[in-house]
Length: 428
Image 1 (cartoon, rainbow, N blue to C red):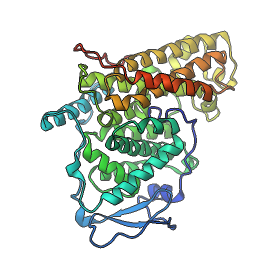
Image 2 (cartoon, rainbow, N blue to C red; image 1 turned 90 degrees about the horizontal axis):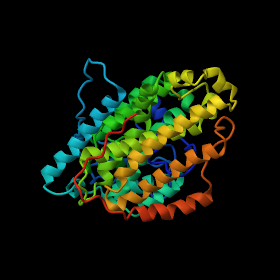
Image 3 (cartoon, rainbow, N blue to C red; image 1 turned 60 degrees about the vertical axis):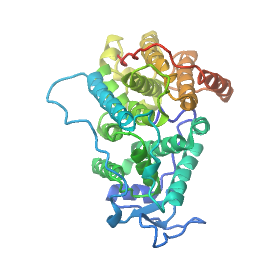
């Protein structure tokens, strides 16, 4: 459930995770496959950056220790949590502020709008990095077809970077939601996070890691949202109830809102935008929260079959409902009224997100508009099913998707507001 922001219209489809990938995470080792694909060769001695061993579905790249300084370190700006009680919303907003500060810091340093930093391309690695990004593009095209189509309108640098982020999010999601999720332990996620720190430090383990390592070196992408997504995966290993919306909000941020914070530095803010950087990040966060709430409402029956209820317990009780009612899967007037309020909240977050999409770089808007419009239609389908999200899965038909894409494309040309304004913080 972690890639709501990037996984636009393709139905939830399990990636065919390889044992090579999962064993590497469980054992904390770098990936070495037992198969070759045509056209992939061992690195020539003179390259001096990556050593390409073999290629599998997720190609394996080993790092040479003597060259660990090739990518600069990008440490998180988020300090240790303060020993005070604060709402989940405030915790998340603090991350937003610090990510926005990182972007503004680089913009001041460059003296111009944010753009790619070509000086970070290491000599002799152009072909290898091209292959890494191409593989990311293939994965994105296979599992998020419409989103992939939208990325083709972006500049080549931004397009490839978004592919790299998408693939990392998908692989992370597969650890706890994929076909081999039962084998994943908390210590395995610890190793995955350590591997994340390595790639931010310029020490990728495989080809797909290499693409993301290169991306975070070129753009002001902070590590904290990535770490927070891993924290959301940890939460899925032990937590199956959420006492209130504040509790659920934090989970939604971990598994989906984080993707918006990862993506905005790459998608870019329109030069003519008068919105604050923090405001644009708030809108991206709101879209991630809205998409994840929509996922939760769509998947109530499916989650219940696994013993999970991603709904605020206090609001269920206020509506006269209990866990037993969820497991029974009966659509009653109490359930309809409860769902109406949940859908109303999700739409509120979509409305907040919509205010910020036009502030993005024009070439980056289409896939974001597509995500917003298509996910919002899922809520319409839940209503059309008479709120039966126990036995009926709400989905947007292909015909409706095709009709939505031109509308999303047209909206991508709406220009940002010319007045100076800040977008409001996503609120509950």
